[in-house]
Length: 252
Ligand code: PEP
Image (cartoon, rainbow, N blue to C red; front, side, top):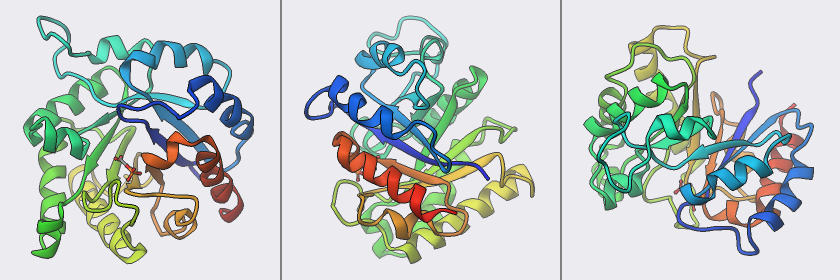
């Protein structure tokens, strides 16, 4: 069985007491885990520092975004080629990038393509906003984000899909297990249709949106649930550790 992913998305923040304090608390609690694969996606600036600090730890390092070109005149951007030196994961198409920076599904598909070309594992974020949910369009939106987002790759090796409903992110209210379970099924169907029946071991589906130490048990035990993407709670080492510990305890 694959370990459950617990990926911290620090966004444009650092843990309250700093990176070193965070790691002093988290590294000892994440060695020799049986059921959890931890990961951290810090702001770009801190990736090289974390790369050094995470040496010999079991924590994966990821970026929060990349550019879809190899290199060139793209001021302020970072390529897959540059990230590859340090990272194994990259978040692509996070709702904040779609909403605030107008990223399109087409651009996201190019990012997925370049990430896989450089052997970075993409975490493709999909999810509906509150209006789309109220209009019963959640499945349609997620399906369309997946179809276009994955349109430029033919191989499902090492792909992570994060279901992140916008209305749950940062709200303190996670989606219900019923909502998450339904969307996992939708995602798995789209993936199976595109890549064939055998995607259970190659495409992992995770959930993000107000995950906490209190709700993790109900989320992580859902069928076909491979882990979580954690924003706010990942800035506090104790909360992050408790999420990890709860999973280790509940999964057998
Ligand atoms: C996120 O934005 O990826 C996220 C999961 O945030 P939060 O946990 O704070 O809802």
